[in-house]
Length: 447
Ligand code: AMO
Image (cartoon, rainbow, N blue to C red):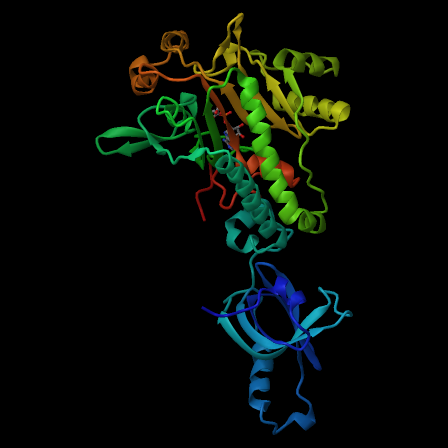
């Protein structure tokens, strides 16, 4: 293992120390009297300096070494990985962090054979073609650090509250959500489907007596959309817990999980996000605003917008308008929209006792975009069967799911949330392509 100092740790290292760094070349300035290299590692960047040999240096013991450093720098290609040793000099005049390293030895450990094919202003598609180089951008690096903290904060909440983490199969015998968005996979002499959601399996943990479970894992949707918020493969954060009395219990839990995630991001990276992305991330206040779908429709209509969808669901424009209204009136960037019509919700959502036309469900919107769906589930087998039949579901195909409800199951509910969507909105980025490590869409399967 190469022993090296991470660039972020240089500022806490004593002036005059000998340090070894490892990173990639961001820029080279090869001047007559002095050479400068900006080296970046996963924590930051630093200026390396190599003064030119002077007449009086000739014949000195270190002359061959210094000559070789100079020649190596002259031949450097942008993007090459280097190991560099040198003397740390704290110098306030240096723009980059007030320090620089005077090179004593340099090894090109991973040479770039060509200059980088992309620049910061390349198109998103081109950047995605060269994603491993695109990810070298400090903002991209920070995005995934923030995501790590966000997941860590949420996982910390789940584990701290004694939840069980599960890993459910991504190969399934039947659809769990709409059949329209299903990927089929040849599976020996039969057909399997890629899981659209861990919905059935996280619910199965309830009759298993697990109490409360979560999963952060891939989900697949054969959705041909090219929007900023759709992928064919995405990371879904799923939670499901027993003993809920309504979808409001699920929302209480959901906002606590989110706040724990945000808390971790703010603590670990709030300052860096402010500096690099020029935005301030705040922990959202609880409780988050909650409006019913009927109220949401009224709010949007009062703002002069006619929702074009025949089924009465909010379209993306209505979601944007609703969020803008909530933000304006409450200052809150999130809003739960509750009590969706039964006709536009999956068969497994529980309906209101006193009004079966409405479900005990919600969508969570953040800055104008849906990030999550949640609900109390129907756990009474006779009612569930009725709802599935009413929907024209293939009951035979559902048998193994329906079995979960025939041997005793507590009331339960949960949510599924797209990780990349939350990160996109939190960091004010334009697309989930920016917050997905390797994006998968209808015409993207590489790299
Ligand atoms: P739903 O289908 O609404 O609900 O999905 C939940 C959340 O997953 C994210 N998401 C997507 N992200 C990127 N690309 C996609 N194609 C995509 N599709 C969905 C969104 C969405 O809000 N089983 C239910 C959840 C539950 O009730 O527990 C479900 O999957 O952020």
